[in-house]
Length: 248
Image (tube, rainbow, N blue to C red; front, top):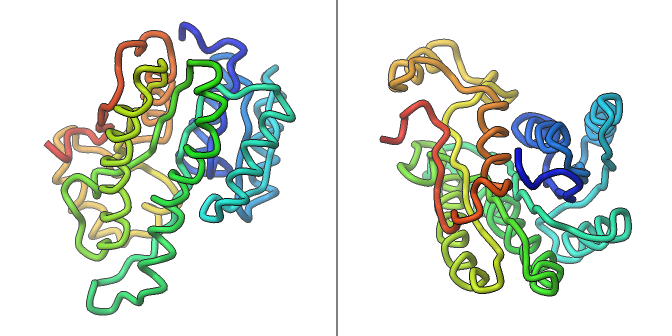
């Protein structure tokens, strides 16, 4: 896709699932990729090896983005390794699902700290580079849960809804410097997370999806690649649902 060759992309939480697919797709389109992970070192190195085996360039960097200092160090490691940063994909996320009446403050804080505050930390750390270059692309990975809510996910839905507001606010702040900020909201995607759902619940979910199937991580990765490319040069502050029509 136009404009991605040689660009440097930092993808948080990219050792598995959707993040892994995004890292692989951006690398396939010519980006040099920082594969960020919090705990899954072996999985992250496997992503790096897969990119390198296909002729791409990638490095794995450990950081917990919920901690401001670690997010700053992650961006600094990217600049040290590749000299610049062009694309930031805030994908890192966790779930602590339970009904609100059973949800502890710890479960609430953990999800908000990683899924929402983590994006804030990374944007703040990366924006200095983007502002200096007067160019940059930020893509936040939200969820349809942040648009329509989901029972048992008050913390996750709140964090992902917060990402929508963050995306639009930062898009307004940085637009005059040619820095674009968008959000991709996946629906039910076939990952380790959805694999844990009971069979009966999964079939009920599919019945609610107009396209009558779960999505693939590659579906989300393709949307991210589009938003990162020159083809989306006039797109900012937008929410792109990749959900088979679920949130309509």
